[in-house]
Image 1 (tube, rainbow over the protein chains, first blue to last red):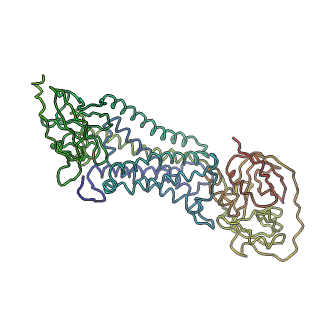
Image 2: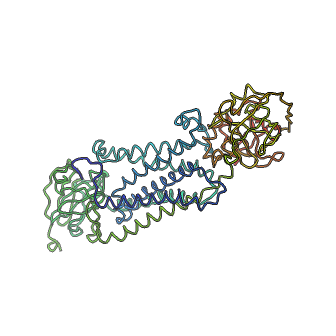
Image 3: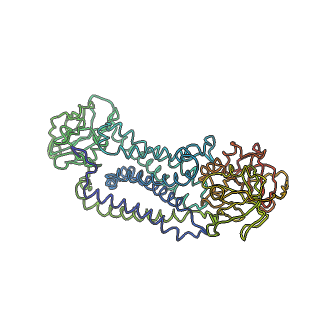
Length: 353
Length: 253
């Protein structure tokens, strides 16, 4: 959370996250670039430019695969949520690795002719009417452009400037970009590769992304079915006895929105489940220092007003609640973001019992 | 979330104790995993073959008769230790460029060529030095040279650019290299057909258009693919030249 925009709001966890990420990437590149040539028993070495391009390309694909596995992993098991925390740094690093890959390709395969290398990239192969021999470079170009746009707009400034829904939609382009990378590899190097280790790793990585997303979607669908409410004036959420102090119950409304009903210091309040930062699930967070804390990036809100504490300015919608005996009901009509709603005093647990 | 005992991570706060173990394990797995993938992918690269610029041979200078197919050739009449008389050299310029403009005025005449050899097995090509140092006229009458027709052949194999194939790039063939091969061919580098079965003892044939012109534009879609084709083959010295019939080009599974 911030009231001003700084390039990076560093903290110890971010330092550790980035150090681990950089160490992993550096090791990948070092081993590929400097250790593998000694093991390969080639009569003559692969051109250094091609070797470098492959190292950075393979590294970018691996990084992108890991990045896309983090989201569904965190949805399936909350213990992986910390991996989500600084994922955007991972993404930005991936862009630099991918640009290096593209640079080596441009300066090798598309250089040394009378034509400009960028023009040559576009006109050298125009066999768009066929699958085998298709100019797979265009998939790489598309993916690279998307990655650059995503990295350039990854800062919170852009999310505020574009608004979270627009920002989120733009950043969903990561999926077409990943599919494009898969096509780039499938119609390119995979067509020539005789050693199937590469093929197995590539297909395994892409399959892991697909399967994890499928599992996470099924997991959420099941959860949504349990949370789903019928349309009505007041929607039952739960019994007060089912609630835990400092935590929330989530209800999926008929209009698709989710409400997080919190029990805070013996009172009940309801806010939107979607964090104003990146739509993180506020109802899966907890109350820390009297504030609802998002499990994704730690953004905090007053539970009765949906406002971040001063000097922060983020706001989420609130909802009206009522009690019918011990049953908690929510009005599905959201209040404007930041609207104060007087918390309901929850019946004492012993009185309920 | 209602499990008040579950550890709750907030990025700007210290990591909860119960999460430290799993996060440490993830870090170790991530770092060692990336190193492992780097090694596995690095050593999974195929052998690009023995083609290379033979700078170790030193600069090669030989004399012969220039022919245009239309790709420039030199039928060597006066060789050296490495390039014998009777050999036919394909000629290319620096980078992805032809030496056609320099060769046209010397067609059918004696000339001296100088440059560096590219060699892959029986295939070779000479990358010429710049200007007249690379290709220049020589006094004397050019001998009559025989071109022997070998009839029409149906072949299977791959159309490549001869220079990358001969070793300018390692690897220098295949679909991942197709755009580069096309760019070389657009620049006038001699195209070579790599036949799966040797033709009269040679698996490499210079491939041209049907009328002795350059490789037709339509054939570029077939570059780097496994194709079958038909054409007339002729022998020029020890080099076979295949005049492609573009109508017969077909991609094979």
